Length: 637
Image (tube, rainbow, N blue to C red; front, side, top):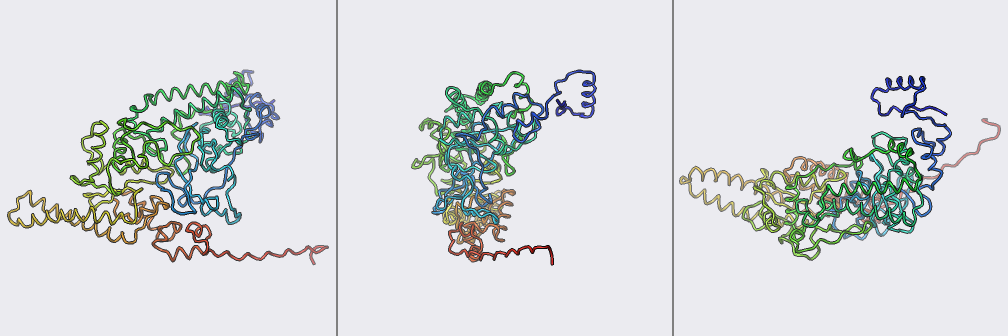
C-alpha cells in the first residue's frame, strides 16, 4: 500500500505537508490520508491516478459496461470550417432560395445548462451533397462528408466539451453536432431511453466517475472529451428505473424550457418577464427549488443502481464540484459573448419594438391568442418561437420594413411602441422616444450577440447628429429597401423641412429670436437630410443584400449610416476585409467584385461550391509519385 496526502484545499501547502507528515509519524489518521495499492489504478481506463476515490468507485469501471456499448453511442465529427463563413445565429437567416444551401441547427458547445439549452446557431448545409456547404475535408485529408454524418439530425444528448461541470442536455431532432458539442445517441431513437440516460449522465455518481477519469477535483475548467464519456461506466437502464429517470429528466427539461420563454432570442420565447405571469403562474424561484429536488431524486436512484455506499458518497463529494456557485464563469466556448442581465423595462420595450415591426404577437399578452403547448424535448426546433407572429396573422402595424423616429409620422416607432404597451394594458414609461434614441440599439446589439456573432435585426440608419433615424427591419431587407427609404421617408421629410425653412426665410427681418433659432436649426437639419439622401442614393444602385451572408456582412456597406460607434467600427472593418477579398465566399463579394471572385473559384473548390460555380473549378494535376529506389546489397558503394 502507498500513502497519498491530499493538499488541494490548503493555501500553504508546504506547511500543510509538514503537519501531515508529522501526524503520520505519530501514528495519527487524517481525512486527507489515502492508502491505495498502485495496481488498483489499473481498474480505471488509462490508469488514472485517482487515489482519493474508494475501491468500490474504481471497481465500477469493471463492474458496469462502458457508456458507449450496446444501444448507446457517443461521438464527435469534423468541424464545419470557418465559423464566419458557415455559422449564423438562427434569427439572422431566412429560408435560402439556393438549391445547394439550407440552414440546420448546430450544437456547438455552450455554457453549463443541464437537461435543456437552446440551440441558437445554424450551419450552412448542402442538401444535394449531404454535407456542410463547401466541405472538402482538409488539404492533407480530403473528405466527401464529415465523420459520424449518419448520426446527424437524430435526437440525442449533447454537452459542451469544456465547462467547469459536465452538463449533458437534450439535443432536438434535426441538429448537427460538433467537436465542441459532442453528442450521444440511442441506436433505436427512443426518447425514453435518451431521457433516462440524460438523467443518469447528470447524476452525481456519473459525474464523479467522469471526474475520476479526468484526474480533476478542483474548480478549473475541464475538458469533457467524447473518449472520456464513452468509457464511463453506465448501468443498463431498464424497466421502472429507466421510466423513473426518464420522467425526472423530462420534468427538469420542461422547467428549464419555461424559464427560457422570457429570452427574446430563444426558440422558446413567448413573452417578456414583465408579462410572463399572464401565461405561467410559477416563479423562477420555485422552478429552481423544484430543479434541486429533481436532482436529489436522480442522485438517489443513481447511487442505488451503482451500488455506492455512504463512504463512497463521501468520497464522491470531493470529486464533483457544485457548478451552481460558479456556473456564470462557464464559457460558451472561446467565441462566447456573455449576456448581461436585462432590466424588466428594457426587455418589455424591446418586445414592444418587435410587436411594432410585426415580429412578435401582442395578442399573447391580451389573451386573444392562447399560448401554444410546450413541445416534447426531442421535437425539431421551430422556424419561429411561440411568441412570434404566426404566418398569415395580421401584424400590429403594416409597414414595408422601415419605421422612423419622426413625431407625427404614421410609421413613427416611438408612437407605435406606446400603442403596443397601451394595447396590452401596461403603463407607458415617461420618455420612450429618448430610450429609443439613446439606449435601445446598444441594448439590442448586446442581447442579439452570441458566440461572437453580432446579429442585430433592427438597424438605425441616421443623420450625422442622429436627429433623424430610419429603423430598418433586417428580415424584410431587399435590394429595394434603400430606394423605399429615399422615396417614402427622406424625400417627403426634406420637402416638409424645406417648406418650413422657406417660410422662415421669407419672414426676413420680421423673424423673432425664437424664429431665428428655429431657422438655424432647420437649416442644419435640412443639410443633414440632404447628406443622408445622397449617401443612400450612392449606396442603393449596387446594394443587393442576401440573407445567407448574415447580418454583419450584409450591413457592412451601410457602415457610414450607423451612429453607434462600436457597431460602426465592426462594420467598417468588415467592409475593409470585403474589399481586400477576405470574405469572397459572400454573395455581397460576388455582387461588388465578380471578376475577382470568379477567378478565385477556378483554384478554390470550396469557394466554387459556395457560389454554385463548380464548373469553373480546375482540378490540379496530380503530382507524380516519386519512385522508390532499392537498397543495394552490401551497403554503400
